[in-house]
Amino acid sequence: MSHTRSSISITGWQSVIALFAVFCTPLSAAGGALDPSETLSALRENHAIVLGRARVTGHLNETARSHKLNVTGPRSRDFSIKMVWAPERKTALFAGANHGVPHRLNDVWEFDLAQMEWRLLYEPDNSRSYLGLGSDASDVVFRDGILVTKRGGPAVVGHTWSGLTYDPERKRMLFMSTWVTKQDDVVKMLGGDPGARFRGPPLWAFDPHARKWDFVETARPWPKAPFGAMLEYVPELHGAIWHMNNWEMRATWLYRSEPGAWTNLNANSGGKDIASQAPGRELVGYYDPVRKIVVAQWKRNTFHFDPKTRTWSRVLSATGSEAPRGHDARTAFYHDAASGHGLLVDLAEKKVWAYDPDATKWTALKPEGDPMPSGKRMLAYADAARNVLVVIDDTTIWAYRYCMSRSE
Image 1 (spheres, rainbow, N blue to C red):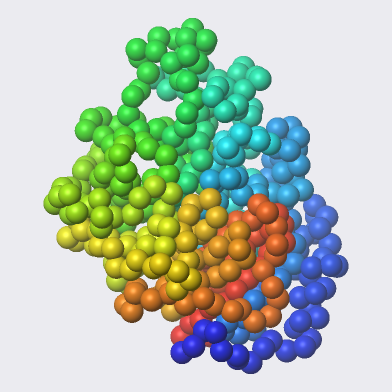
Image 2 (spheres, one colour; image 1 turned 90 degrees about the vertical axis):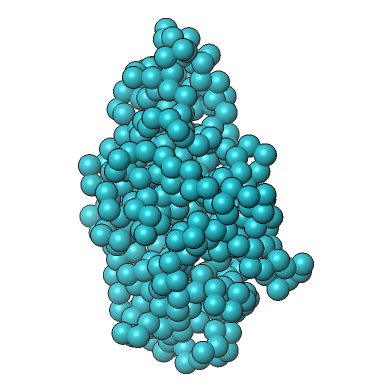
């Protein structure tokens, strides 16, 4: 099956419907975007379509409105572009802060393709500054060893890099919110004792049903929390791996909510070859449920992690255009359930690549139909329920079907 060849396009009248969705969809609070189900069901292999504009809903507080999030939705935020799939909700979740401007927020969003809706699940607390708590720290307290907002959200909020994942067993989004905030200075400012501050990894869990943040406090041993690491849930391990390979941490750890503890997996038997065989900082990756491995792309190098043997393997090192560059500030990498391949979307170059783990081969795709939007703060995720890769430019929704599923 080729994914760059021509195939039968959607019919003319369906293209007219798609254009109508873009330009003529009513977006009143009581109304909303058109139901995309019929359009998506007609979408052919290797075809893309602009579905229209999504509405933005939820309790858009003053902080959100001051940054026009009620108009645009969350938008990508520098090194925060990863979205995670919540299978029981059939939606994708998003969180994470900008580098500095225009804001640094702890809000949580949900995108629902069936409803064509950006849904704000946790409205942001006050915006933070690069090193501190921002111009208004009145909503922050030092409690039980952590800096937390009065509503229970993280007061220190970082980029996600690839440190965002979803635990389908506990139905929680997990976020390693590591950042450069001078926390001891902040604790003193709030009248607390820096010696009482929790020194372990800043892992947070978000319950999308209760719309509630919770800090995950663990006992030693625990990993460091370097920037640019990867947090990825692995069902066979009943937990999420936390991986980095640089001077700060050269290891793969496992967090399990039961018993609520960290374990060093001693990847590659703790040998020196982990330095050459495992991906480094600012990688992107996904869990492959068919092959039961984690696939990662770092720069132009491709890696597999086998949870059973606890082994990383560098399976491909490209020197040119035969493979894409993986980087967590510009690319998103997800599993495509219909094909079993990985789909990497480069939001900077507006390109899509497919990766075949069996052949360890990359293919540059040429989607037919509507071109990908050209926004500068786009997001992307793989919608497993509807078999499409979704790129979101504020509220404009682009969907691409790489491969037909057996049921289509």
